Length: 395
Ligand code: PLP
Ligand code: TYF
Image (cartoon, rainbow, N blue to C red; front, side, top):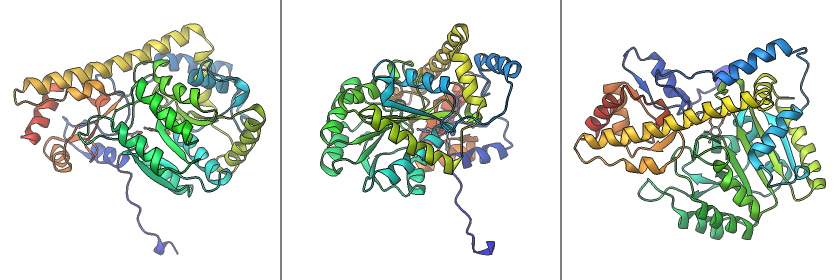
């Protein structure tokens, strides 16, 4: 019977890493998948994480199941990190989830089953997994304009117009909390105020994907957009991922936080979220969440983690600057200064699909077909090589 099964297309991003791994060229560079790398090209385990793991091995006494919504301390940590003091705890239901992806799927199932007739508006472009997850959950999607015609800035008027004129009152809207994937283009504080106003006027439900908190300007600064929206509306869903900011990719650690108008509505929503979890993965994995809770329960480990997070963030900023300067120094008039206005790991380079292909076939440099580059995959020592290759495919 499996003869009827058709081969599925590979993931457009993860598939590239398979090709990269198979490439024998010793000088290959992987600027595709959104994973942080250090100067030597490794994705290190943070020191704070290693130390927390040592403590956990000694102190762990049981492998019994966690509850459906995960660890209490962890949930409280997420609530504080995302919302600060902005929202009363009784209005927030936090559930530990297997990564940001798991949280997004729970959110999608919740919206599809509990909020009939709701459609979700997603930016163009967005992370390819967003429409795929919503489609898997049978949640209808429409797109709103996001990327400006220059492909380096936000089309705020287009975005606001689509949400104001085309979305129906009560629809949902997907927002990237910070470090927009794939463009690196984030709204300014003033832009967020205007976005929040349209969301409030149209009673839209914000679904905020928060996968890069701390990778933009800092933990608190990166939450400003989300908190600005929450000043205007009393309902929202936030999907947190700790894959990037704790470097815990393979441990699958994230959370879904639902903000309701009052404690009663919050409890009803929580009970439905738990039912969805039961039929998806039953309860979340312990280890990654326990690492985060261990770090955040200890002042010195928290301080160490914040230092390590800052080091990742500043390295990315330095690489952005170095790339821009090195391209400029080729003397051929290449101006990539827009990279300095963008946040997080990603930017749209403006390279065409043909140039992207050429980078791969002639230089073993892997970037996503859209021209998205993972800045965190660059290295200082190989910047000249990278820029020479980019210049050669552009000329
Ligand atoms: N959302 C965005 C925008 C992402 O880039 C990612 C990256 O992996 C995720 C969600 C999912 O994160 P996780 O690996 O925790 O599932
Ligand atoms: O956009 C990225 O590169 C990261 C990692 O199916 C990723 O978000 C990419 C594709 C995917 C899962 C994670």
